[in-house]
Length: 192
Length: 104
View 1 (cartoon, one colour):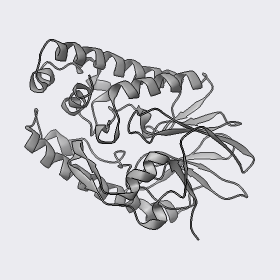
View 2: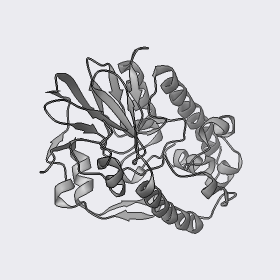
View 3: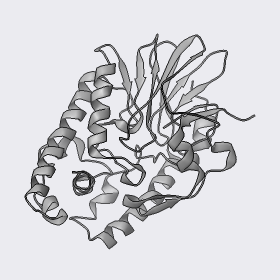
């Protein structure tokens, strides 16, 4: 029995064709027919299932151009997908329209949608989070964006910017995983 | 990110949750683009291999919503008589871990 898959319209587009992710130097092959979303959305959409109110909201391009959030109303739970990586530097996919500024805009919108009681599920990292941890993620993104932008504006090359260690103040907390400080610096540099 | 009922799994979400950072410590400093690309190619394979063997654990949240950890990112699951609803699909290679224990 097949599943019904709902996704952002751009996600269906990307899943249907060869998708090159430049920063991984990797070409993802098209998904098999059964894994292609059968329903798409490009605007907010509500759903009632198992007695629960579900709200789906597309983001403007952030991690990719196909991100969306899902809210479980009664339980006050917000899944924010890959716009939030809890405790680790995020990957940002410029190949599909993602950007550091888009990640910050999405973080601000996530903060506005949450209260202190909301359980926030990040796309990656520790799976149960909250507004204050999300705020720390957002503040980290803004600080590194500003530092990298200043270096780039001063004419530093990518290599010089990486060597200047603009993420240093955050590395102990956020830089201990796959997206390491030089890689994250490169991702931010690309978008400022 | 997709919203899905029952199974199909996404290749778009890497399982970064279960890859040891020690594996990447060897790179040392900044890499040339060519080296970085070679490294990235290895990363995708490593991530897939790791996801294939990573166990999936469930955390109960509130109401009939839980979150599954260990398959290409964090998957929310809503259960009930209408069927299961999954938010975010994880990575295809961890399908056996996701379906076998049916953790929630």
